[in-house]
Amino acid sequence: MCRMYNDLGSTVRDLDEGNLNSIEFPEFERHESLNAKMSELIRGEYERSCMFKAFTELRNHGIMNAWVDNDAEAKRLAERRFRIWKMFCDEVDLYGQVYVMRDISSRLENQSKP
Image (cartoon, rainbow, N blue to C red; front, top):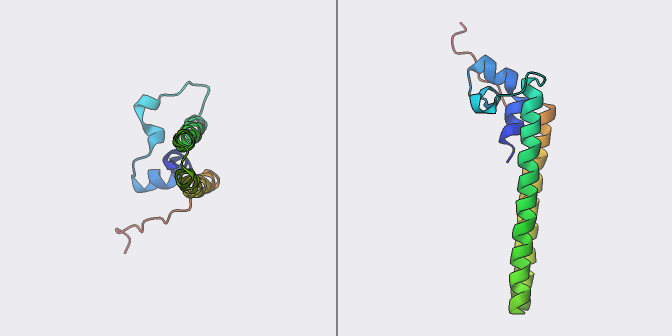
């Protein structure tokens, strides 16, 4: 989920280390009025909004099935699963937001230095 945010935050490091970064993908060609980082941020925000929408749909579907079956245990489990997945998604989202602010990855040591 935070891949695009990671790429946004690690642009300089990836360039220095020769790592692949989605900012340079030709299929993400941007309008000349946008710089690469702004374009990546827009794509990341879109991806994030899609994930949250899909997550909400999944939650509603699971809860609806439990209500249709009138199964109290299924309702409880559906809510519990939702809370666990929400905690995971919130944590991953937090890391993504941190990457937008600052690259938190370790740099590779240059092996060619004496």
